[in-house]
Length: 216
Image (cartoon, rainbow, N blue to C red; front, top):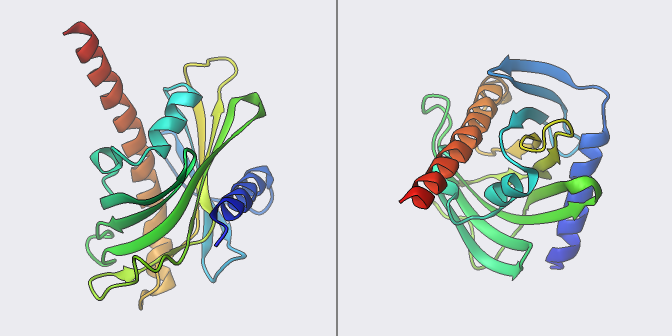
């Protein structure tokens, strides 16, 4: 499989979602985080758009979201996030295992994702992710193997305040298994808000750690 070509294609899809302003319906507004959705063209489910302002520069925010090393320390939705193949500096395959959510009504899933970061004019970064088959990590009986259709983040500087970034996240996850679509639709918006809160808290913790290290 040409992973780099697929990563480029996925990044273009994420850019397309960002530029598409029609048909979005706001499904949740909480803690200055907005979640919108529309029907996905990839599967019988929703494409979600999540927007928030993050108190960090775009380059640092992009680095924070892209690097796999510390992901499970701040992303409370995951129990495991491991790089399984490094393709180049900007592209890798990862194996993730989620925690259960919706008060246990949705059991943990695992995913094999192709993750990539692309840098564009105007200091805009696109971090894209899509599920792939990887023979070294076949599905197991321990977890239901989920599938992420083109997902990702757009990181943009806030022109009037470069210390802040606009973060726009796109998610279209096929949970698979025997879940009723209504359960996913009812629980996904709150889980996406929680994820954005985890990002904000993780950035804050990282800044405090750096300050402590400098002052010590």
